[in-house]
Amino acid sequence: MTQGALQTVDLTKNMPDIKDSDINLLPEVKGKNLSADEIKAKQKTEIETYLAQIAFVLASKSPFPVDQPQNLQSQLSTESSTLISTLSSGDLSKLDAYTQKAQAGIDQLKKIEVPYVLKDIHKSALQLALYSLSLKNSFTLNATDPMKSLAAVSSLQAVAQKATDLQTQLSQILSTYGIDAIKFP
Image (cartoon, rainbow, N blue to C red):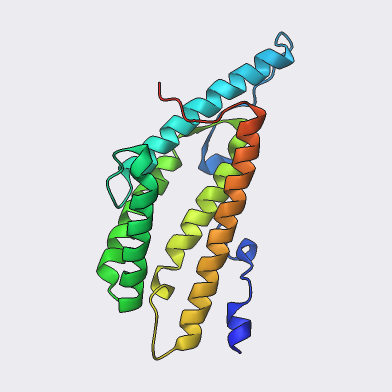
C-alpha cells in the first residue's frame, strides 16, 4: 500500500487546462521579407524580454528577498528548509502566505507577452503552478492519515520532476538562440 502511495503521480490528467487565449501570446515571427537569421534574431529579442519580465515577477513575488543572484541558491535552500519545517508542523499560516504570493505571481505571469516559440513551456509552467496551488490542503503531514501524507509527498515529487523537465526544455531552447543569461533592459 505504501509503495502504491509513493508511485509516480500522473500530473497530466490532474493539471488544469490552459488555452492560448488564457495567456498573452505574441504572434509567430514570420514573414516573406525576413531571412531565417532575421526571424531568429527577432525571436531571440522576444525571448530575452520575456525572461527579464519573468525574472522580475519571480523576484517581486518571492516569499523571501531576492537581492543578489549569487545569494539565490543559499536563500532557496534556507526557504526550502523553512517550508519543509512548516509543512511537517502543520502550521498553515506560512503556507497561506506562500500561496497568496504565488497566486499573485501567476496572475502577473498570465499578462506577460509570451513569445510564440515558448508558448508550450509557458502554458506548462502555469499548469504546474496552478496544480501546485491546488495541493495546498494536501501538503501538511498528517499523523492520523499517513497515506494521505505519502500521497502528498508523491505529488510533490512529481511536481519537482515536471519542473526539472520544463527547465531542461527551456535550457535547450535558450541554447538554440545563444542565450545563457538574462539581460535586463
